[in-house]
Length: 317
Ligand code: FAD
Image (cartoon, rainbow, N blue to C red):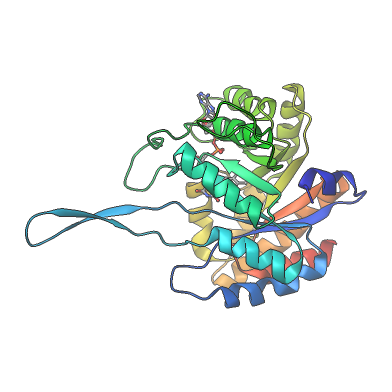
């Protein structure tokens, strides 16, 4: 079912979460068994991230350079199929501009349609580590809004390089990302919201936010999004902090701030277990306040580890 339908048909806040494909060479079974306990909270959908290919150049003894793929987490489409089969929930694959030509995107969407996927999250993706800034593929998309446009055109029966409308239409419900603390490349929140609106105007039907740790920032963001004339559902992203390493990694990687009160608690932590206790408690308080504010779903960034999210969900749902 389409996510927008799920959200429309519920009177209470739903529970949803995101997982990452396992590292190449690791089994999917472990991941599926690992997330099974979360099914207790009846998620209507589970997001599966996409990780683009990174390349390195390997020098051969004859002096020639070989371009070698170092893709670390393949398997997004296969995992979607496995999740839908095993748990009878909707899987939402993330679709990126980065690394795809428009033709490859079209083919990927046809595959997804054939396996029964009805929702996709359309994203630009980040620059590969080896490149300083995002560069679109030849005949690819520069921004998520262009990807949304392509998906919506397919929903209307228009395929690339074809003049006429096809009788077979895909029917994807398209979600996009939003940033309560602003996307790091946007020079201002106003600028970022202008392009968020473009994604919605082109046909995206819901927004999932980047993680945040200060609910006030989310509430302020929602107010500004609404003032910008965007009225689609906004689903907040929640990340329980679980390791000492994440205290520096999360703000640096995702361009966000920890509130002073949270940081004061984290600074007292000596072990990962201490951090997990603080992180879970913080996420519980965040979740309770967000539910009280009537958010459509709480969307947890599990990083494929269910334990912390399970404890939070048990407390708040
Ligand atoms: P866009 O919406 O295209 O925006 C990118 C930047 O360009 C913004 O600063 C925006 O303000 C600006 N902009 C947009 N349009 C224009 C325009 N026409 N002209 C000028 N500027 C413009 N990454 C992955 O690699 N895999 C994933 O699975 C993944 N999942 C994610 C899930 C969520 C919920 C979120 C919030 C992020 C996820 N990301 C993922 C990260 C995301 O790909 C990066 O944050 C990326 O840098 C931006 O993607 P976007 O879709 O938000 O970009």
